[in-house]
Length: 175
Image (cartoon, rainbow, N blue to C red; front, side):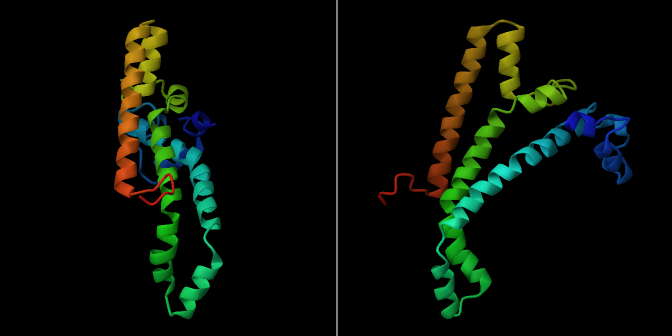
């Protein structure tokens, strides 16, 4: 669908972006290094926003209404309720959403492969797409596996940093 939306001759997104001056010509949406990455980011955000919204909505559903009612009786404003009730209690859900989104960004292959194939000139090639090309186009399975292993280590380090930075208690034992 996105390749049709970005199509230079009939794509609505390309024509809208040309009309408001974001890109120079409709044909350059996925054909220029400068615009292709932006197009992939827009499509990826569009694809993952509902999932992130559902994760955060699930976190909002577990916050008891009684907390808001008692804080309103104590004179808390909406901003104070958000800052001192909603945000702290939503922190684990935000952590999970942020972690899932980061992991999803590392493994992005399908969207880039379908829209640009990593081009133009390798400007949109992700590490996952590079590993895929090394393993299956060049049949260098050992090197491709090493790339994937290093990527897994980086993801593990990022996960550890997220846990420490957000101070999230994943086990619920309040150590």
